[in-house]
Image (tube, rainbow, N blue to C red; front, top):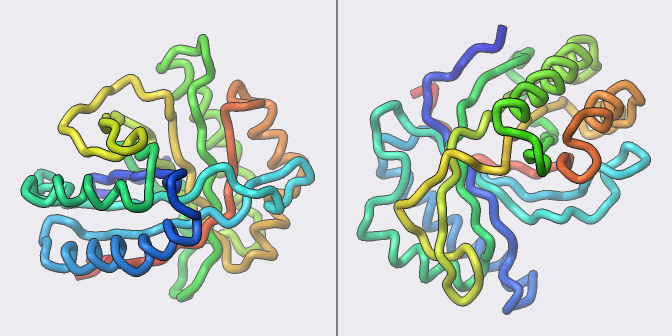
Length: 252
C-alpha cells in the first residue's frame, strides 16, 4: 500500500505571460521571483520544501518526449501540518504585482501526497517525469479518482521491474485555489478555493537517467496503461521535467 507523507503539499502551475517574450518571463522567474522565494522561505519554519519544475518536453505519439510542451512550469511546496503553507498576507499584494511581470493562468492545488514506490539509495541526481490527469467532461469526481487509481496501480506495477526507476509519488488533488485577473487571467492571489477541481492528480516519477525514463515510457504496455484509460485522449499529458530544489528541510 502507498505510504502517506506527513506534510501538507501544494502544487502551483502557471504559464508564461503572453504580453512579454518567453525569454523575458524565464529571466524574471530565474533571476528575481524564484531567488526572492528561496530567501523568504529560508526564514519560514513551517515550509519544509520548495522545488521548481520546468517542462522540457511532452510525451508524444512515438512514446518519446520530443513534442514541445503545452505547459511551462510548476512549483511544489510542503509545509508542516497545522502550519502556514504560504507567504504572509502582507506579501501577497507584492506577489500578485510581481506575477504580472512574467506569468499568467496560475493554478494552485492542495494535494494529498503518497509514495507508491521508493527505491532511493543515496544517488544525488535523477530524471523526473510527470503525468497530469484531468477530469473528462461528463465524468464525476469520484469516478475520475477511481479511474486514476487504476492508472496509478498499473504504472506502479510496471515500475517494479523497470531498470533505473527510483521513485513514484502520487499527488491527489483535494482543492484548487482561485485567482483573479490582473493584466491577464490568473495573476492575483485570493483566499478562495474550490473542492471540485477539474484536475485529478499529478504523478511524479523519477529515474536514474533520461535513457531509462525514455525506455520506460516508450514501452507499449506503459503507453496503453495511460492511453486506454478514461483520461485519453485529451485529458492526460506527460512531461519530462527539470526539477531544482530551493529548499528541502525534511531531514532537519
